[in-house]
Amino acid sequence: MVDNVIFSPLKFRHLTVRNRIFRSSISGRFDNYDGSGSQARINWEEKFAKGGVGAIISSFVSVKMRGRILPGYAMIDRDERIPFWRKVGEKVHEYDCRFILQLSHSGRQQDVGGIENLGKKGLSSTNTTDSFHGLPSQAMTKEEIKETVQAFAAGARRAREAGLDGVELHSSNGYLINQFLSSGINDRADEYGGDLANRARFIREIVAAIRQEVGDDFHLQAKISGVDYNNAVIPFDKPGNTLADSIQICKWLEEDGVDALHISSGSIFPHPLNPPGFFPIEDASRWYDIMLSSGNQTFRNYVLFKFKALNPIFLWIWNRFQDIPARAPTALELKDTDLAEDFRQFMGAAEMQELLGKFQGRNLHDATQIKANVTIPVICTGGFQQASLVQQSIKANLIDGVTMARMLIANNDLPQQWQAGRDVAERPCTYCNKCLLNVLENPLGCYDERRFGGDRDRLLQEVMTVFNPGTFDV
Image 1 (cartoon, rainbow, N blue to C red):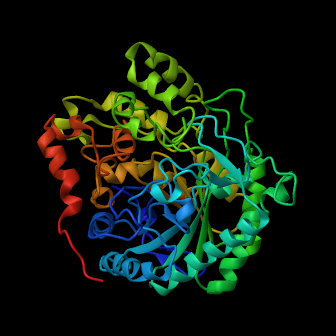
Image 2 (image 1 turned 180 degrees about the vertical axis):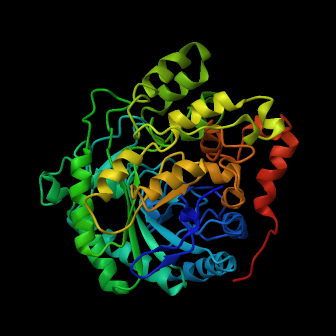
């Protein structure tokens, strides 16, 4: 039976979440090309609120058109967006679920900028092209930095006016703020580059501007990469920020008035360690072509994906860092009876146990070290889907809560299954990561046909439920 600690309230300074389960930021192209929202987005968020999570952290919500990662994501770049986000919040609140808007900017990590950004380089801390996709980059001027700081503050003000419960700064996973924080990316020679204090200046100015805009009583948290592992794909890249760097950044953020920390890893997305699991190279060969015109290394990647004889080369590069210890060993037993009959037909308890041991709690060690150095709550992402591990981690005061995305895509009702006494879902997420590559062109959802008994029609029916009902009226 699951211990009630998972379902006990988590109290922040000015926000209480009814349990310790957060839907992490996960992006889908559900919205309109111009950045306005759609009913599909509302339906999407309702799935998780209805399934029992205590709070939802939105997908990547850009504060400026220049900073979006893909068209089809709802934005928060102007006041006209407020009524839509109010509708989202109202729907989520019907289920006693909180909604935290993730304020974001792509920087140079812009997968597809859309027609508005055609011919423009991604604004960043550097002029250096990223080495994985070869996405072009332009170092921001001080005036552009100032404008962007104010854009984050305005986004927070709009979120508050929409009646949402808080905001999160997307300052990890290689996006703009992480590009300033990372010693592996930031090569500036002014007061926004160089030592750690200078590299942290940008995010600290954002926090100060948000507090000036919305006051001290509106929830503000920051998503931070515990370790950058900036050289995980390209070995000759600089390694980037260490855990010690991130601990200091988190201590500064607490001093500045941040209410909570959300710990992840990596300085690109996707990253060999984030999200944990397999690289779906067949899906990459099918859907990665949408990025061919985005960077000067995308054709190289496409060739490695497209031709099976070359797949082992990429997979060897991608998987080099998989054996980095993620957490202290924990003996967690998975019984064969925990799995549904149709799931056991393709994956038994022993194989699922191996996956849980390898991929679960990927960032738990880093989050534990950060929590030991701050007094504000720390939540952690990284492949969690076994209630007993979450229970042990919270009871041992290693973390205060967990965030999940793919596991909840696979099982929207996972919190309810946990509360009913299950340790894992009847049909767990298999860490295949097919959802992430399909999202470049297709609706976000679980694309592992094995979880649907090999029935593709059943899979597609579930994916398409996000479009029913189909319209909304602001």
